[in-house]
Image (cartoon, one colour):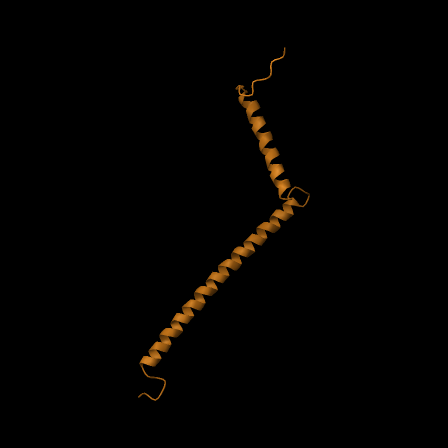
Length: 96
């Protein structure tokens, strides 16, 4: 009668063999992850560069949009202050 292997049993591996096993598992996992997002072909490096470039462009556009919004808000506040001062000093109207 053959004994079934005990799935809960611990085994000991030499450190070098364990490192090799970990490296192989990591490489297999990385290849599988790249395959799942379609970055495993000949053009993968170019695709990643394109994605990085696209992300950099998006960040620049976001930064520019924030700067523009701050400028518009600042200009609006300054115009409101100037209008308030002009009204206070009665620069417009007949001054009654």
